[in-house]
Amino acid sequence: MPYSASIPEPAPPMHHRPRLKPLGTPKSVVVRTDEHGTPIYVRLPGKPARRVAVIRERWRIDDEWWRHTISRDYLTVVLDDGKALTLYHDLLMDAWYVQRG
Image (cartoon, rainbow, N blue to C red):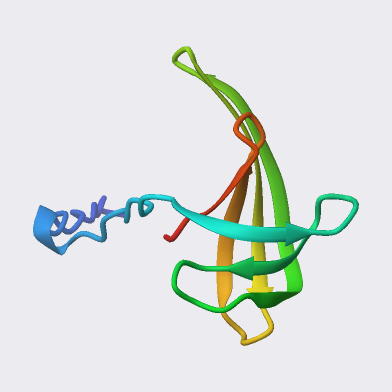
């Protein structure tokens, strides 16, 4: 039986390849929490406060990013208007931010 090799298609040019989208610059937000530190209201800049309807995901990052210590709790939340956000609480500065993808 003769050997048949398939030749792979060449990779698409770089400008046609999907690129990773960098995260946007974090923006400071006002977050009201319950007694356990769980967000219950979020106020985005220039907007009225919205109730947190659901917390979809929660994770923590503790790292020494090349000698700049990071300690953050991240949350993916859905507000009462249906808007999904990624928030993080900077535990070293005790400040809340929204991180857009």
